[in-house]
Amino acid sequence: MTNSALLLSALLAVAPATGAPQSASAYQQPGERIEGDRDTEAAILAVVLAFYKPAGRQSRWIDNERLPSSASGVPADGLDAQSVDALVTRLGEGRFCPGAERHRCRSDVGGRLRVSAVYRTDDSHARVAVLFENAWPGAPRVASTQVFHLVREVKSRGWRIAGRAPASEQAP
Image (cartoon, rainbow, N blue to C red; front, side):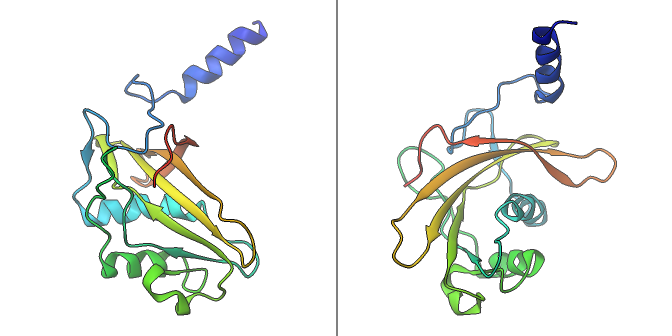
């Protein structure tokens, strides 16, 4: 098998099961619905936010204001305090804290996280955009938005990150 054929085989093996191209947009796309079940949303967000687990003495604060769901810039409904607290507990108090209660973080060095709504196309695929903004005293502000594609595992019924990419447009 040639290198090109091997590469094509590998790419096809990781393509989404639906066969549809994976969107790198931070916004809701046609055919996607916003996840309404709080437990499912929490499980998906916990997997994605764990990607940003801080190193050393850094912390991450989870903002309750969501990223906009469309280019109009109007944010989706925010995360309520109870949902943020549940994520903080799940991800590790101190390493993570609510954005409104940064005193609960172990450090003021690290970064702020804002998430989009959880977008679903079917029961086994989800997509979430996450904005990470650094917070290092004296350092210039650097922010980036990544889009995570998740799949639901058949046996465990848990979620895993199947891919991620920089957002095709940066959230405000």
